[in-house]
Length: 259
Image (cartoon, rainbow, N blue to C red; front, side, top):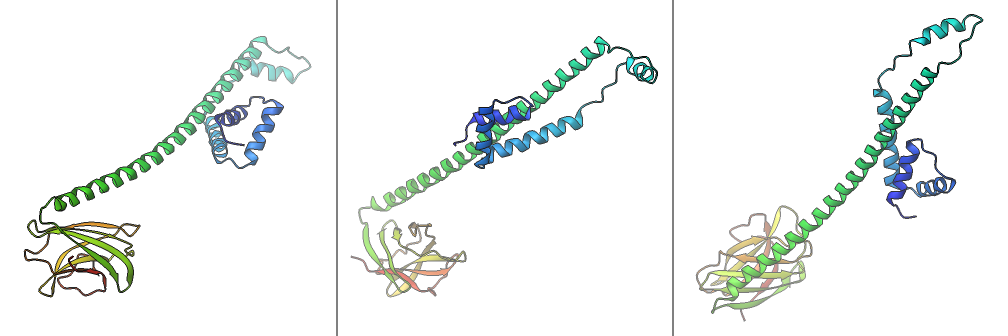
């Protein structure tokens, strides 16, 4: 059966020494038998609270008549129980029960607050992930717009090469703005010490245009601000050591020509 706060209340009532009906006891036993982690954790918390309460309870001085009654019990005479003593013991039983009930209530509230805090932490993590994705998407749109708004923008299609034949991409660039945007997909994940590096070819020679990483789904949107001043003749992407190198050394995974 599905967990509910009613089951927690039954666990707390049982821990406080309250009598459960047959139906309530059967319901709780069936629920615990299904392995409810929350109710088991609450039961353990209440047991610890009860043990702590017992250990911290102050010593109670016996009534003054106790010594007299013990001495008299050694002889033939017997003294009837004192009504005042019975009342005193009853008060202590009530106080002890109230203290135990208070400990149970505190433990139940603490368990519920801990559960609510864990739920809020999980929701916060999910919201943070969504916010980061939204910020990334917004940044990508902004950097594309900076290039695409240029009146001399050009575009080239990149095809997969070598170890990544399924990779694909496009480069949008403006010679006047000396900026370019690479949008790629189906890129393979790389070791932590490797990055992708974009190259702009001029007069047959590659010029480094920046390094970038692909996300977990193999996508990348990279803005290069290191475009050379002269006209680009070709573009390529290689796998290089993290941080980039002045000349390509790794395998080519994307390459294309201006259209």
